[in-house]
Length: 117
Image (cartoon, rainbow, N blue to C red; front, side, top):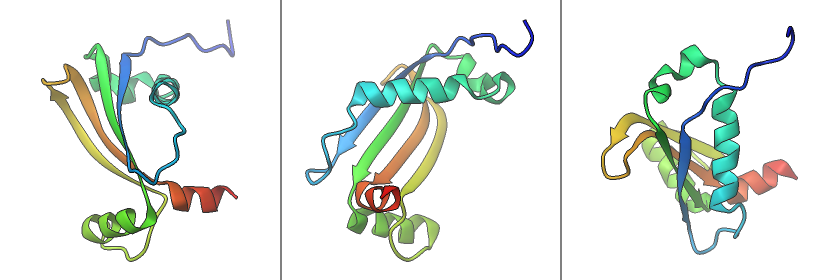
């Protein structure tokens, strides 16, 4: 059928969620796993060929405050001040988790909340 996309098989996505004590309780890990699985399914197959070789995909998500992300932004990006999201690609198999680790996503819940308002 024209105009319909064939459903693509996507590896199981597992999220290691690190939430600082001041971070909100939402979103929950299962919600993030569902969102990341849906996002991965929309990536063109040729762009996710490496992921297709693995049965499991891992992503680390850290929910931090502005102070912590400001330090990371300065150290890794040489940018002053907070930002909403930083990502640190890994792109390697993690034998301890038995999954291909895409990397870390660091989210400042304070900046994200301000930008969403």
